[in-house]
Length: 259
Image (cartoon, rainbow, N blue to C red; front, side, top):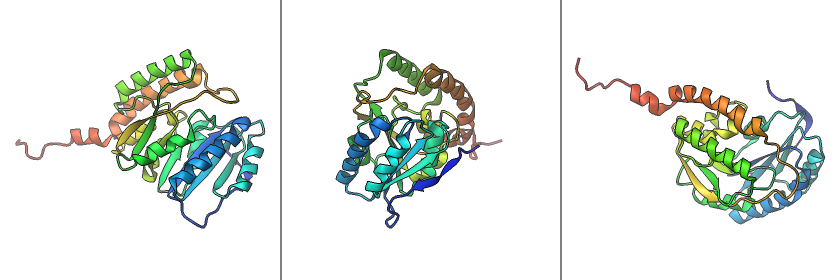
C-alpha cells in the first residue's frame, strides 16, 4: 500500500529537463537540513549540469517539513514531497524515483554523513558502469555499527555475488532505467546493486569520504540493520537466482549439442 501524501507538494523549476536528479529522504533531520542543502547546492553548481533535488520528508514529527518548504522557496531546483506518515526509507526513495526526471539518478542520505561534494567522484565515473556506488572509507560510526555492517556485507556479497563491498553507503549514482530493476521490498536500499546486477546492469564502486553526524540521532537499530535485512536476504537469494539473466543464460540448452 502506498504511503498517503499531504495535499501540498513544493515543486521547483520544471522549464528545463535535468540531466541529474538527486533524491534525499529525510526523517526527523531538521537540524541537518540547512548545512546539507547548502553543500549540495554548491556541489551541483560545480558539476555545471542541469540538476534537480527531490527531498522526501518521510512523515517526520519534528520541523523537517517546515525547514524543507522554506529551503524550496529559496532554491527553485529543490522539490519537496511530504509523506503524511513515516513509511520507511525504501518507500521514501521510491517516491523520489517516481518524481525524478533526470537521465541519471543519485541518492544521498539526509543525515549529512555522506559529503555532497563526493557526488563529483561518482559523476566522473558515469561512463564506467550503469551504477556507481560509493564505498565509505574511514567510517565515523560506532564500532558496533561498523562490525554489523562488515558482517552483513560479507554475507550479502557471498550469497548475491553483486561484487559490492559497502552496500550500506547511501551515496549512489545510476542510469534512470536501472531504477526499474529495484524490487519494492522494505529493505530495498540494502540490495540496490544486487538488483542491478541481476537485471544485467553493470556496477562499480568508488571510495568516498564519511563523517560523523552533526545533529540528530541515528534511526537504525538492530532490527533495521540486521534482522530484517537478513530475512529479506534469504528470500532474495532464492528470487534473484531465478530472475537473473546470467542464470537464465546458463540454463539455455546448447543448440550445437547433438541428441
